[in-house]
Amino acid sequence: MASLIKCSYCSEEITDDSDFCPHCGALYIRDAEIYCDEHPQNKAGGVCIICHKVCCDECGVEVDGRSFCLVHQNVKVEQDWAEVFESSEISDAEMVKSFLESIGHKVLGHNFNSMGFIWGGGGDSPVSRSNINKPVRVFVPIPEYLDAARELEEWRSSQTDIGMDYARIDP
Image 1 (cartoon, rainbow, N blue to C red):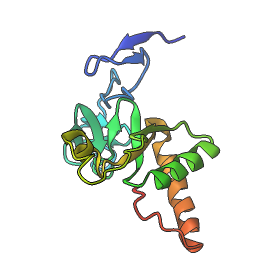
Image 2: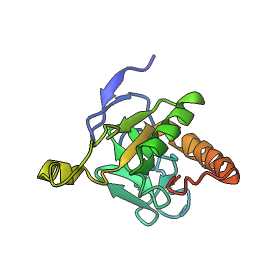
Image 3: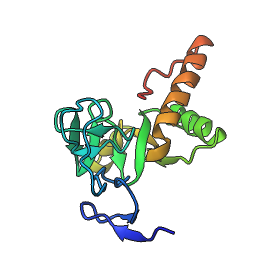
């Protein structure tokens, strides 16, 4: 049975037999040179934490200490969660969250709190102004991101067919 060690790049726990760190994308394959999936002549620099594509410096990028392929470089990641939806409308985000939970995904929401009301200057303060248009964000665990984004896109398409518009979904 594999034991846990700390990744020497991000200090997160990984198994001692891991080929790469799922938290940051650092390669841990020993006794072999690893080459890029897209550019087989180039040595790999890391693994995309979203799709697990092995990337070189030409087709991969590091964002906040994590490796991404160029396709997934703009996926927002917090800890081990990837943002699958963002909206300034709480009701849209609630529907997306409920849909993802109903098909078995673990879901984490950020900024689901009501902002209250602003009236006649009574709510005009730095705090209330900072909350206006604050996005509501829906996250899934990084390993679930690709499936959740695909399922959300399929669901969005079916909702658009019946007159609902969820164009803000960004898989």
